[in-house]
Image (cartoon, rainbow, N blue to C red; front, side, top):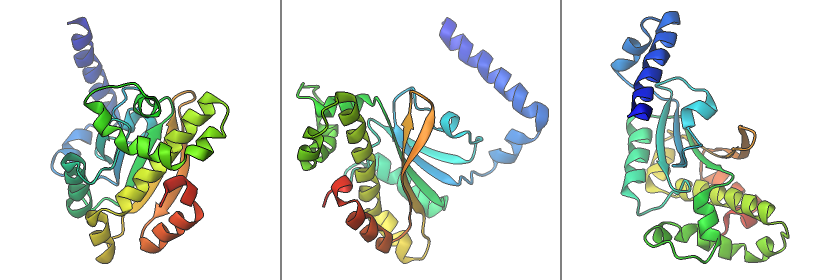
Length: 215
């Protein structure tokens, strides 16, 4: 119970600190959410979206899952994406991976993890696509980091191909797609690809980084 009580105490301290400078802070945000960003990240506890980006409550709509996957059969992700794009009209959709990702590491090995193996199948496919490149990387840590990067780039590509994003682009409502990685060793974000805002940009991305996102 001590850890649970700590959450309530920290919450009260946070509210007191915020309202000290802006007494109406929470009231102004209670009526309607108007986030600028949709953040698709990993469920890892070391990757808190709002904390690592420094945004305030109300600025970021968030979806998290194991290894920040964008899958066409994931109704949870697609529902969040549709609501974010069509209702909240977010201007930016971010796919954010992180180094030392347990999901990516599991997908790189041959151990059986049960149900989660189905979820990791896409990452294993990415590893197979780039097997020759990855084999040329002699250092295990560098290879691990490279797969994290490849996974993010693949998910940005998957995101661009969803009917939700395609429909939004056809209407001229063009949310920009971004791919980045959080380095848990130093707390910094690394950009991989920014401002993918239409099929011309997707084609450019596919052509110039074909080895990174596959066919």
